[in-house]
Image (cartoon, rainbow, N blue to C red; front, side, top):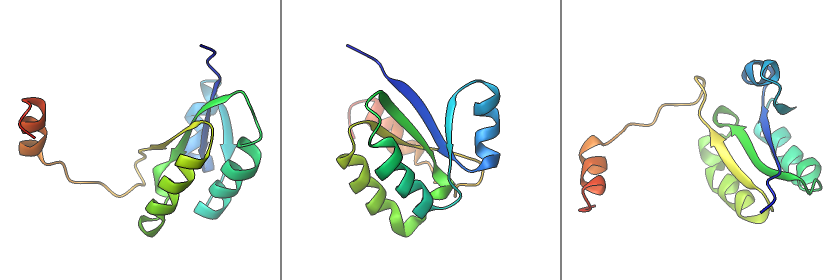
Length: 103
């Protein structure tokens, strides 16, 4: 199995620590820019395995479009939680039941 490169896609504030760590990054400041980078630039690169997309660039109303796009590309597209992304509540009871095999 050949493992390709990991690319982080986000705005300049999100990308700074990844750049300092030496990761490959691409900049986008909105959902439309991110979608364009994914569809045109990254889709043409054969050695990309995973793209981490800053979650705050995906508006809530575009979540379905994000999932659709993720199913069409040849690499794994993952939403990367950031401090600017809206928090999601955690249902601890549900998680515990799932861990015990009841959910």
